[in-house]
Image: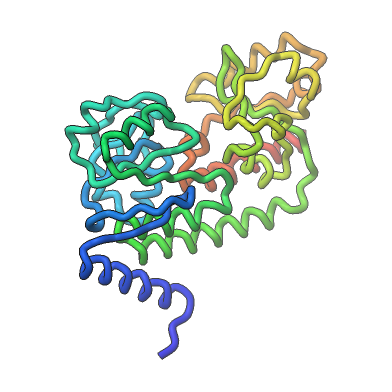
Length: 295
């Protein structure tokens, strides 16, 4: 009997799940290539990343989540989960009390000292990390294997791949513009070239003026921005904050983006959560950038 596409992968996922149940353990490789073996498919998952929380719900494993961090508000069901801190600091006592089967961490965003402390406690750690949109499908499938949801994860990954291909095709002919992507004010934070938001700019036919920086979210000064003189300045801000950020740039009329009135407020929080819905937010971002190009 021949299996193709999703049918074959779903059958394989079911077979792997059956084998794990039969032998009482599950072994997966996380996004950093580290192998993790658990005694059983985890029933109690703690996510220390907004993106991983969203992804777990998206692959059909949200019912296994028992706690997460602040700003994990998509889908709405995630808002009912207990919060044990944020990406930079968590309450270790509360984490221990949860008796989690596995803790999903974000290597680039969580506090490295706290990740190390979780390891010392002997809690199993799974590292979820996507730096570019092409990384999402594999990450979704691996997380699906961890959570015993391979079939639904594979279908979610396939749909994501189709949407990504369509967006990339639409963006291929866009004229290039240079962009400062501002993600905080006082001090000015932007994104480096390995950040997912930098990849979002690339998909929109734009160039991150700080793409050469290795740090995910570096601090930059006004002089560095003036030296790069971006075509657009985009304030990817919390709701209600963008206009205040942009108003401060108007004090520098020599900047091309200021002179040409290409200061853009972008408050779509799906992009900053760094979960699968960041792709829909990128589509939104591309349309905003297109409108600025046309002005």
